Image 1 (tube, helix red, strand yellow):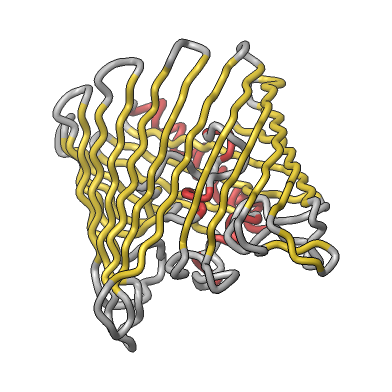
Image 2: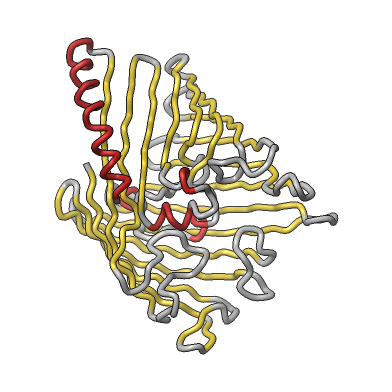
Length: 356
């Protein structure tokens, strides 16, 4: 939180100065936004370390209040140029960026963009991931907690992204990256990614994202990784929407022929009963038996079913209260309670999010 306070002190004079320039020239604009997600979770297995399972990186604390994400973002725009800087603190920054150097753990976003035309633009820097539908900003997701697919794929990426928007229905992107999810590079190899989105009408939306690269350090043999994320959203009505997500990944085995694989599936249903109340249901399945993404909790790797129900109340236009029950079920005894092995886990999660 001290970091965010210092950021406010640093940015505000810049904002006022740039704002005055924007008023006089109508060419420069600086906008500042903020978001904070305060939460409490209770894991009914009562973990001794007071933390949720290792494969979760958001809302990690058990039976104690916490801040999952406190975010402050500044956007500078002038004609065809745009720059984004967003700094953060909280559980998401602590746990999801644990492998990054300390100086990088406060960076949520740091990039510049240039629009060559209305149809072509280029982004460079630390970018939001091109993979998946969910982000670390909880208010933008259908459920309070992130799906296993989201937790097991990049939230951010570093590199360059070339965007092409031929019309209102189609969009394409080609990416050159330093890896799967890195600010500081972990090897000398480059990775690549693609993005295709199709929005034929106000009912359907389709997304296809890919990643290809080596995630191992230069000191060991390369293991090429290929990953594909597909999701579609269907709006049954103005109040009811459904979505389906599928992840498939393969990675070369170390020092041998063949590949290891992992996969996941999510189905969601959202019902907006009014302008203030929204409910959602989620089923998810995740399998990583070779430990490519998740450190194997058993010899069978990770095999999980998940069931989530959530209820949201928009108290004010910039204030959202969310409550959720999440259940995990596995064919293996990967959980424990009172030192006794268990195959399931139940958690209650409540959050208040505020933004400007």
